[in-house]
Image (cartoon, rainbow, N blue to C red; front, side):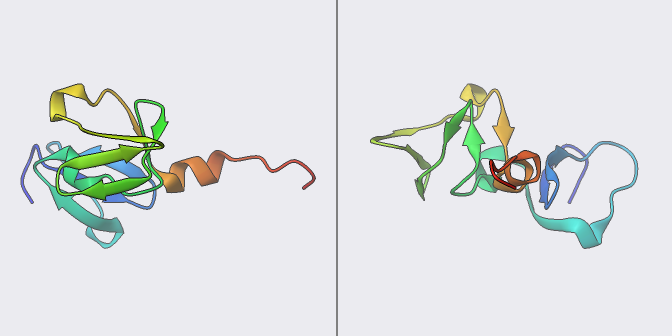
Length: 88
């Protein structure tokens, strides 16, 4: 890993800047943020339902997501940690 790479932890996706990161927490890393997206994550507010090569599936339609098109990502782990279940 080098400065500028992205990495995924159970807490979300971050970019490695100068400084320290806890290597034990890193699930995977890549210079391309799109490589870290998993089914169940939310990209630009839409739930990712499938991934094949560089195609991200969102519900009833699939389309390629270029790196520059990604404005926000909420990982499934982040979403679950913020979730409130009615009746609990």
